[in-house]
Length: 241
Image (cartoon, rainbow, N blue to C red; front, side, top):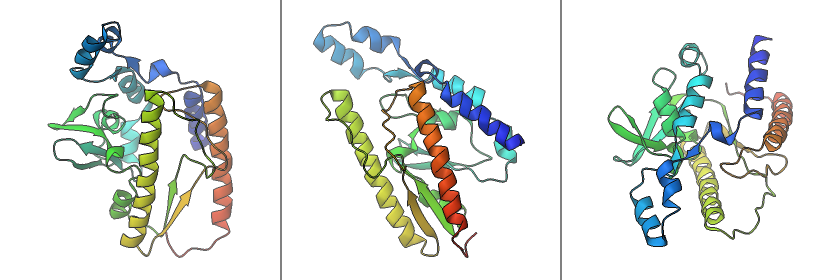
């Protein structure tokens, strides 16, 4: 009952989240848009990022219980990318911090890199969208479930703007990276049953948009799909942990 109550509160939080709680347009970016064309490009080329990370940092600080994570028997892995070394930087239950979590969500260009222990870190999805390899190396298991956010029949409307083109290109690259990592995980860990799960219906969500009705719909779909997955897995015997 306690776990269910926490889950309900967490779901209620995400149902009501707004764009202003996650990001804001940085003032230099806003004013750069008011300049003549070539001055806009010059101003943006020297900007640290398009978005202000402070709302995201405040949301993470208020929502994440780090001490509870440190005590939890459930293993946690958070991946980031070290820009200088061009390699992954991984955090676990004992080493994760608010800075590490902000860095893990810092898409280059949108959010600034985060300084952690002298290194500049950004979103781990830059080099590994689904950290299945890191997870299996940290804790080998009999079955690994990789959850996609794309349904089999998912399609987007034709990209007619720079933003939509960049979003679609980024999401396409990430989707294929996940598929490659899954195949690599199956080769490196032949004793692990690596399965890919996709939503039973298209999510129809756009990056950086926080529509309450869409979030509620997706959460309900996720709950239904998770329950169906658990029932299916319960019917299949497995020798793994």
